[in-house]
Length: 129
Image 1 (cartoon, rainbow, N blue to C red):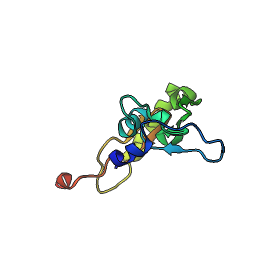
Image 2: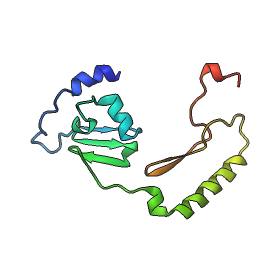
Image 3: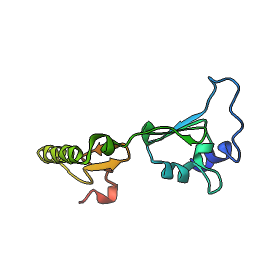
Image 4: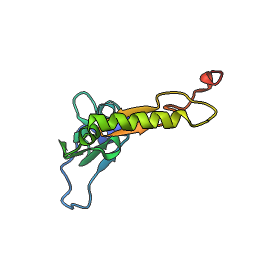
């Protein structure tokens, strides 16, 4: 799909419309590097394709290619409190009785911890495991 979408976004983004209510934005769950790989090109940054861009589900934001203020969860909370939170979550998740436990249970992204019992759905080839 990204190969069909890319020609409509590139090679050059027109100037912002005069009507401020008519802006283009892009929101994705991936980090900026992954969005660059999916939507941008080596010569065109993904942040230049939209008026607003939001990586990591809005935790990292760009307006007209310029990064907006953002905060890092660990810097805000502190390393010791974050470790306490992770330890609590791991003990809690270990006590849950579910049919299958697979994958990374806690993944830290730039601005939030992502806690999940299964990091990726199993592929049919993995069903025998």
